[in-house]
Length: 401
Image (tube, rainbow, N blue to C red; front, side, top):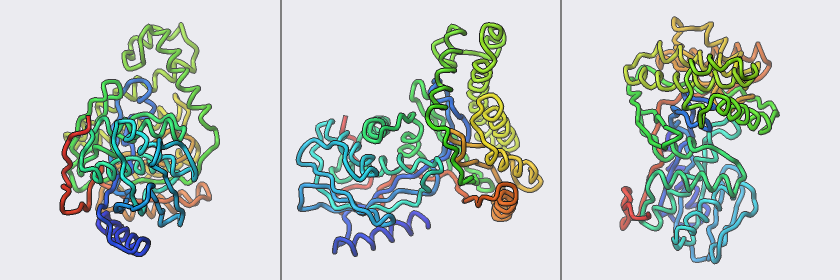
């Protein structure tokens, strides 16, 4: 469904649920990271894009003292009492929303009581940031309902804090930043140290990103991520830098004898990945898709061999993409996200995207016995106000410091 179609569906469902039309409809997208993996906690760069899969909320003022949310897909409801300070509660999925509401309360905002209908077509569990989409959608709704906007960076950080403190997920800043700041036909180059952002054009309509969900998740857990982070910190200490962002390949090679092989390879991935991400941004600006594709393959090999966060299923997807190659319309492919399952992304020619999708799905099923889920996306819009009451403006007044 397009954003326009899902908006119409949500408005209709709101009418059926609450017996009146919604006053506001807002949306926020999921994301994929085109390149720049495990660089965020090393103060590096990432290059995500918003995808055309959204969390959408329709809402109106409620006469109660609560925010009532109905998830039309899960057929599940949640009540958030706003008469006092909002805390964690049940059901668990409501904590993403609760955390954002609490963030607004902490800024001194009187949060209004609302009736809300939620619908999301961001796939769950594939590392496409359905949680960030929900948080940013909630923040956008609250901005619209009170008629005043938060600075985009502050909005993203408020949503990140909600995920940390209410959902218990120690995520980086990328997911919320791209959901807030994404723009149609543009990627977002994010400096994870300074939090500075730069929109990178991807306005060539002949190419797009194919998202391939492996539909596997190997339960190696957060323990493996914590190990990688500790290994990076150990390597940075040996190199005498605050983070691997400040290291170079030459510095690492000179210090190779001072660290064990595992820490050396972890550092080699991060240093190389930061460089690959900056080069990929240059390639996108120039519409040099073969170069961007080769950088994506190099990223995957490094994640597989040096960072050791891939898995046989993700490797199979990349191998299939390589076998199709540029002649078949694929410029490059890599795993995306934390690893050990989840999704891969491929840079492909739009005119043969359907053919490529069918070929990958068939071959992947042969190799693994698993059905993959695939869909195409061009860089999509970030958080949007789709409907506002006449007295409100879709362009919010920047007023909440």
